[in-house]
Image (cartoon, rainbow, N blue to C red; front, side):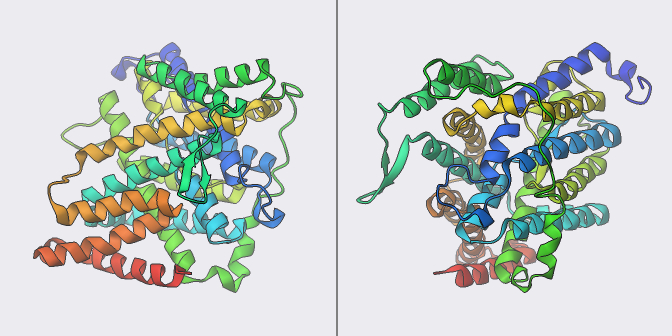
Amino acid sequence: MKKYFEFDKLGTNYRREILGGFTTFLAMAYILVVNPMTLTLQDVPNLPEALRMDYGAVFVATAVAAAIGSFIMGILARYPLALAPGLGLNAFFAYTVILTNGSPWQHALAAVFVSGVFFLILTLTGLREKLINAIPMELKLAVGAGIGLFIAFIGLKNAGIVIANPATFVGIGNLTEPEVLLAIFGIIITVIFLVRGVKAGVFLGMAITAVAGMIFGLVNLPSGIVEMPPSIAPTFGALFSAFGDIEFYTLSMLSVILTFLFVDFFDNAGTLMAVANQAGFVKDNKLPRAGRALISDSIATIVGSIFGTSTITSFVESSSGVAAGARTGFASIVTGLLFLLSLFFLPLLSVVTPAVTAPALIVVGILMVASLGKIDWEKFEVAVPAFFTMLMMPLTFSIATGVAIGFVFYPLTMIVKGRAKEVHPIMYVFGLIFLLYLATAAH
C-alpha cells in the first residue's frame, strides 16, 4: 500500500493521509444535506409530486456517488482529491431543468448520464482539451462567477433575507423573523471561521447554526442518530425511462446536456489544477496522470446519475485535506469511506433546515465570484459577454440562460470589433446552438 501510493517519495505516512482525508470530509460534508435539499426542491412549496425526487434516495445517491468518485480518484489517479455532486450543477438540475423547464427529474438524470458518457469519450479521445481551449478564458471565468452569484441568491432566498416584491421584483425580507435571524447568525459564524482560516468552516458553521436553532426551538430535535440507510429504489435506474420518451429528444434538452458538459469541464479541471498546484504536483505546467483524474470525474458522473444524483465533480474543499498533510490518493479513499459511513446517520441530518444550509450556499457563492478579478474589463468586446453571462444567471434563475446569452454575444462583439479571426470556429457553432435554444425557450 505504502509503495503503491509512494508514501516515502512524497514524504507522508498513514497518519497524515488519514487526517487529511478526514479533514476533507468535514469540509465537504455539507453536500450530504445541501444536495438532497436542492434536488428535491425542498424550498419550493406546492410542487407537483411527480417533479419532486425522493429525499432519502437522493441522500443515499449523494453519499454513494461521492464515495465511488473519491475511490476512483484515489486508486486510479492517486491524488488527494475528493469528489461529490457539484454545487451549481445541482442548482441547474433542480431550478432550471425541473422547476423552470418543467422537465421530469428522470429526464434531468438522463441528461447527466449522457453528459457523463460524452465527457468520458471526449476525455479518452483527447477532444476535451480542444473544446476547452476553444472557449475564451473570460467566458470560463464569467461562468464560474455567475454560478457563484446564482448559488448565493438561492441561499439568500432560502434564508428569507431576499424575498419577492410585487413593486420591485425582489426586496429585503423581514430581518426580525426568528428563522431569518438564525440564517444571519449562521452566515456570521461561517464567515468568522473562514476569515480565521478554519478548514472545516462551512461544516462547523452549519453545525453551530443547527445547534442554535434547536436551543431556541427553531429546529426540531433529531428523531434518532443511527439507522439503516433509506431505500435507493425510488431513483436507482430511473433515468433509463427517459430514453423511451420522445419529449426527451428536444433542442432544449440538448442545451441542458451541453450546459452540464460545459460547466463540469471547467469546474473539474479548475479544481484539479488548483489543488494539484497547492500540493506541488504540477511540474513544468503539466500534471502527471491528469487523464486518469478526468476519467474519475466522468465515471463518477455516470454512476451517480444511475443512482439518482446530479453531476459529480472534484471539490475545491480537498485543499483543506492537502493543507492538513494529505499527499496521496489514500486520503481520498479515507474520505470515500467516511461518505459510506455517513449513510447510517440520516436521522441526525434532519436538523439541517433551509436556514442552516443558506450560509453554506452564500459563502460558497462568495468564493466562486473571486474569478471576476481575472477578467479584462477594459476590453468592452470581452466585458459585454462576460457581464451578461454572469448577470443573467441569477436574474433569469437559470445557469443555462446565462451561458447561452454570453455565448451568443461573444462572437457578435468580437466580429464588430474586427477580431472575428480570433474566435475559434467552435465558438460560432456554440453561438448558433445557444441562439436557437434562446429562441425556442422564449415564452
